[in-house]
Image 1 (cartoon, helix red, strand yellow):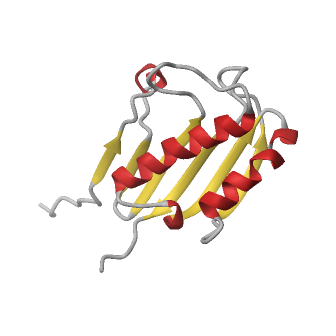
Image 2: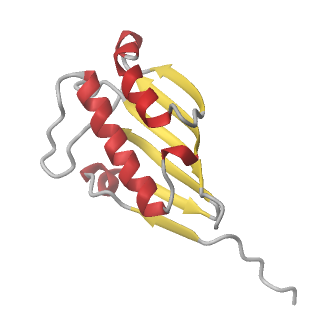
Length: 136
């Protein structure tokens, strides 16, 4: 009988968002050297509040992503792909200063998509893929 093939270890990272249990997903998955961070909105996971401004939502979304990347052993510098989803493309430009601050030293490949989000008060969702840094 041939030996069983085994792939890279898979680790799942939860953030405490109520949607994780409801929709059966986790904030991030580490598969081998890759980190896949789910689409992340600017909702406060503890209290459920969503800031009114797109800039404040973007800031909170980036903080959630940064926390997930840190738990995975990565940072914004390791992000190779980012997708921005906004219901109103006019809301994208006000977020650019925050995005430059997060990704400016190591800009990833990026796409902005205009589409509805799960809750009409949500103004931005950000999804990233990162590669774990080389040891050493």
